[in-house]
Image 1: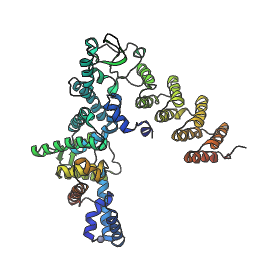
Image 2: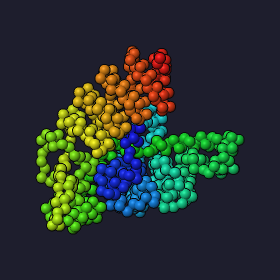
Image 3: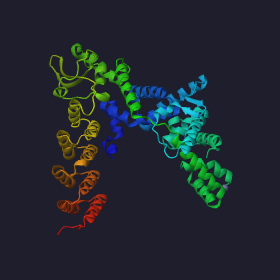
Image 4: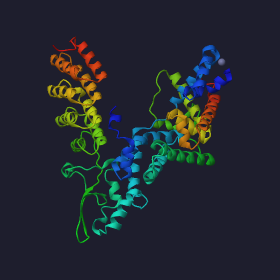
Length: 196
Length: 306
Ligand SMILES: [Zn+2]
């Protein structure tokens, strides 16, 4: 409640930032930067890479904000920048076949990313073991999706964006975004079917 | 819709992304088909498992990214490629003011205020920061006076950016937060400062800053934060008096609702009944009326005064 109350009207904020008001620019960044960092972290599964995307994305926003003409929402404009950066990083990674952050051990999947997440699991240890294993599997399956499938899934499932908005952000149609999501969920269901 | 079509559409169904017709057909199929209902249950489990696999951003990570961005921004503004840079162009090219061109440089303008440094009265710093040689200077043009000769006189105000660290127990940090809590230019800063200060409601300065903000801050978000800070001291007579006045005067229904909640925390408050009854006479927000009515009910008081 307090959060919404202090929010200046967004277009007023943008205009102020375009006119050189740094505190408006700061507020604008702060309205979105947590979601941006979360998206990058989940897509790239590396805090360092996520931070790189954060830095580059907001520097681009800073340099190009004067070109923003309100012909789409600021969210769409910002996410075009962010998703492009993430897709580039994912594609490069695919080419280089970089080692992933997931390490197989005798106990199953151990993930160094566990240090960056809040522990949500509780309940009995058996269940927790199962859920950790499932978590690891989900992440592996996510790694197996194409960058675009991955992106659409993240934007729909974790960022809660509508397919129409996703299409607009990724420069494609709602229908194409829907197909991407469909393929992603099919693949995930196929690989995780024995877990649920 | 066949079972296979239903199965294929379940993910889109869960995301609410099916067309109206498709959703309708799918739902009527589900009503009839137990197999597909169990598929839906599995799909839901999978959906929930995805939630579980999400990585969350820690506040430390966010803070580190913000800090790094701040310094990168300052560095990037040294070049001419930013729009703050245009300001420097403007001053150096059009006005030919070599003496002030430097402090009005893009770096200086960016350094001012971004993610940390704010204008604070000189006294508030109290000499507890060391003067770094490389401290960026932030400038603001306060006054512009064209002269008949074609020369222009500009008065520039300069402040220096410092980074200060300390914990809430640090008296100097407290003093700066108290100043920031009243920064008229920045409601976001007031909220953040208030949020930190409210952990120390036992301090007299903090208490009066919270009361002051509750009465006078133009921003409802700041007033709500101040209310949060006063939660523990709702029994204090001065606080209660302010709360009663705010209840009858504040323009924001959210604030009024919170005030009611605070006031009725305290049992045995006969004078409360009068305030609430007065509110009932003038309140036109339905939700606030409802809360007020309920509070009066709970106190076994009549809704109207006679
Ligand atoms: Zn069926």
